Length: 127
Image (cartoon, rainbow, N blue to C red):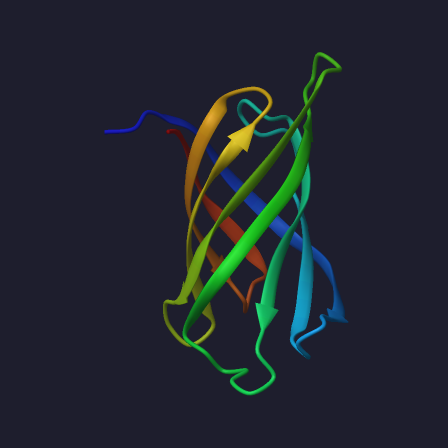
């Protein structure tokens, strides 16, 4: 089993929207921690989801994350992940992602977003 290296909770801080060349809606939602997280310090980042104009109410899809953390010692960590989301209730998403960050290397994340409370929580594991 993979080693858990951190639990996290992020709060939604806003979203931006654009259109890609295939007339899809590209949503970037911005998230941040409300204090220092284990391993990563204060965290800020964006989750990207693309919605098909012909099927905007799908039950699952692809996602990507790009973010950074500012550690208490003054150093910085950046990371990228890609994966999938799926509906897990009326206003809930379950997310599974893989990627890499500049501190821990290859990682996986299992998490959950509550769209009602605009809270994203989960765990990060060494891959």
